Amino acid sequence: VVASDDDDDDDNHDLEDNNNNSKKVVRVLQTSHERLPRPKDTSSVGLIVYNLGWLPGNTNTNTNPDDNDNVTGKDCVTTMETTLASLVDAISLLRVGGMLSVVTYPLTSRDEDAAVRLFLTCLALRSSRTRTWEEKVASFVAAGNGFGDDDSSSINRTAIAQQVTFAMETVVERGLQTWRVSQNNKLGMESPPVLFTATRIK
Image 1 (cartoon, rainbow, N blue to C red):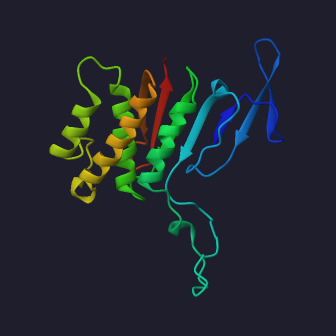
Image 2: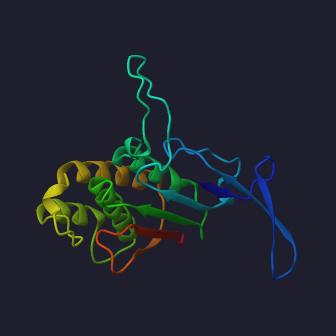
């Protein structure tokens, strides 16, 4: 989902500002994360939300004409590669003060969860004076995943590091600036969904 202030679409919603009763137009786009739509004014994008993992209730027909089976929701899952490419696009769309919200599901895809976690950590380290994002990627490969997972052998650290390095090199090339990143885990649940939020500071 991409939310922006564009006002020339049928999917617009008027919102009243509680402070001064003026109206703002919010455009909500529900679409695949593989190719994000680009609004006319990218400075209008204030929020991009990802709910990764499998698609509940999906009953799309399989594209193989020799196979009449339906693809179930658990057969339709997001992947590390397309997710990272989309996140790079997303952060280039967000205005200063804009927020990226990402929910990952470690039980659905440990690689994707670890890749998102590493990428957003590296994004936060872009403005660090004590450690570089390159050092974080190197330590991720050398010392295990570094994020407290009980079974670090179940993820492909080398492939994750390569994908995140490529994504971060693209971020650096585009000149994107300072981000503050936080993580929220539900307590009392084994391998709970994880909510990451990244706010663009400048």
